[in-house]
Structures are given as structure tokens and as C-alpha cells.
Amino acid sequence: MCRLALPNCEHIFMTSCRSKASSMEKLISVRFQTFNHSHCLNLDLTSVIHKPTPSRNQRTIRVTKNPANATTIQGVHPGSVRVQFPSMVGWCGPTVPFNCASPIPLDQVKMKENDSVEYVSGYKHKIVFVMGCTATGKSKLAVDLATFLSSEIINSDKIQFYRGLDIVTNKIAESDRLGVPHHLLGIIDDPDADLTAGEFCRRLEETIAEIIGRRRLPIVVGGSNNYIEALVDNPITNFRSRFDCCFVWINVSLPVLYRYIAKRVDRMVEVGLVEEVREMFVPGANYSLGIRRAIGVPEMDAYFRAEQNEEAYKEDLLKSAIQEIKDNTCKLALRQLRKIHRLRDERGWGLHRIDATTVFEKSGEDAVDEWMNVVLKPSLAIVGDFLNEDHEQKISSKAIENPIRDWRLQRTLRNFT
Image 1 (cartoon, rainbow, N blue to C red):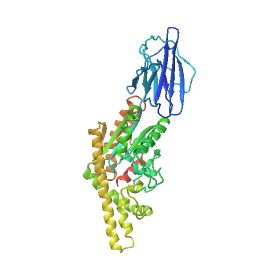
Image 2: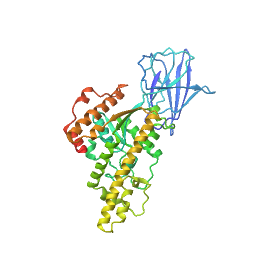
Image 3: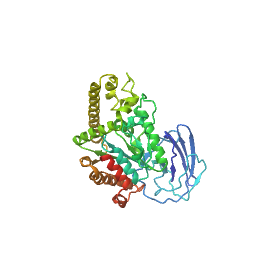
């Protein structure tokens, strides 16, 4: 048996295999058809096999013979594939590219003539999802996790895909990224462009593949839970059959979260929310398209249209707009929470819930300590166990216990003040 490494290419949608096994000849010819290319690989099975235990994440697909005595399977995805004969006592062999057409000599193998052929999809790549309502600290947790791991972060908030309105959309500041690469932030220039669920999933899949190609762990973070569901539970792309997912859900009780949202909106106004939205204001704009759907944009419409009116009237409109932003953000948090509950209770998603309520009830250094103890350390333990399952990437207990650097503490302190 020989293990084959699938290339970083588009999904392989058909694989055919024709085998000939006799006492004198043991040769398998495997043809791989991708969207753009056809590859043929000849395997000379003359090898002694040793037997490491296959990963529990490997998925077996049995192949049935067609009338032409060939075998065909559908839906093989990037990862690794191996050809297996039940009479063999394990598997081994070099990793080879698909476009290699020359025979690959192995040692000796005792193979029965009637052995069936199996294809086994290989190791399922790991992905961490950080989920939660708006304003619960998802971006901060993702960065904190990434500082302990060889990771890159992928934005999954559909509004943050658009360029501009960084205050309104709460894009994580460059200084708060702590050098961790972030992807899919501000990549759509047209403010009226429609980001469909299909386009969202395509871009995330491409970015995930790029990060995995760099042998790094993707951490997906954002609040667009409907789109995340479309990605993970897509029956066409079979996402779950190709990726092993860990879902970390950071939760805050709604009364505490609502109070925090009100304070956060006030801070957003202080640092320039009104001026930022004014620059994008267009009378009669369609607030159901693109980035103008973001909470904080349609709420300011009446205020901007009344700018020529008397000052007292404008002040009342501004106060009303700010309160509406707070109310709509709280409503968004409630919708997001209900969606997360449905994913857990109805869709059967295994979510690791982290209760961060006590963090938001504190301030200053007390909040920093609480974050470390009730959010970051438990999250690191969850992700560490997830990564250690197949020994792909480890987090040492010492690393979890070590205090984070002062500059990270200062950054965290600033966020909770």
C-alpha cells in the first residue's frame, strides 16, 4: 500500500483505479481527474508494510467496480488518499505528487488476488472557530489564542468584509492584532456590493486552504452565524468531512452585555463614529445593500438630513440616533444568541461555552485577571486538547500557565476600561 498526498488544488471530483494483481505482477494504475487536469500515477506494489495506527480522523470510502472492471468514487477532497488491500497488515510508503507517472518501487508485499481496493481520505485539517454575540470579545480571544499558536485569523463578519467604516463595524485595530496575520478584513471596495453566502464561503475556503498550505492553524472569528452555518454544514462541499472543527463560544449574560454595549457605543461616538458615517452619507441611499446595512449607518440618516435645521433639534436627533444604535446592537446580540442556541440544540454542533460574564462586571486590572482566569486559560485548554488529539500541534501546560506579556496586559486593560 502507498500513501498519496493530494495537492493544494481544487476539489477532486472523480478518481478511478484499475488494478491487476497476480503472483507475478502487482501494479495499480490510478487516474485522478481535477477540474482542470487529469493525472495518472502507476504504483508498483512490492513492499513490506509496517503498521502505524491510522488517524481516527481518517474516513474510509469503499470503491465499487464498474462494468469496465475499473473503480470510481465521487467527492474525494484535498488531504491524502491511500490505496489499501485488506490482506496487508498496515500502511506505509512515500508521499508522492499526483503528476508523477513513473512507478514507485516499494519492497515486498503479500497481496491476495481477490483483495478489494479502498480509498481512505487522509488527515482532516484542524480549524478553530471563535463564536459569540457582538461585543463579547471574540476578536480579542482569537488574537490571544493565536499568540500561543502558529495561527492566522480569518474574519467571518460579513460587514467587516467591506472597506471603510472601521469604527462603525468594529474592525480590530492594527495595534490590537499583535502581529497576528488577519484575513478578509476590508477587501470589498464597492460599498453597495452584495456579499452572498456562496461568495462568503468561497472566500473563506480559499483563505483556509492558503493558511493550511503554510502549515498554520486557521482561527475563524466573527458573528455572521448564518454564513458560518452555510460554510460548515454545506452538503455540496462536505466541509466537515475534510476539516476537524473546534467551536469556542464566548458568552456573556444579556443584561450585562447590554450595559456594556451602551458604553461601547458611547466610546465609538467619542472616537469619531458620527464623522465616519457622515463621510459615507448619500441622501436616498439604499440601506439594505452592502456596508450601509451596518448598524450605525441607517440610524444616522435623519440626523444628517436635518443638518441645516436649528441646533437644538439636531441634538435631539443625534441623541435619538445614538440610542437607536444601542437598541439595534442589543437586538443583534439577541438574534445571534438565538442562532447559536439553534446550532447547538437543533443542528447538534458541539460548542465549548466560555462564560465571560464576570469579566464584564469588573474593570481595570481586575478585568484583566478575570479574563485570563475564566476566558483565556479555559479556551487554551479546550483548543490544546483539540490539537493534541492527533499530535499535530501541541500547547504545553507551562505555556498556558505563564503570564502574558505586559504589552498584552496593557492592550487588554485598555479594552476593558
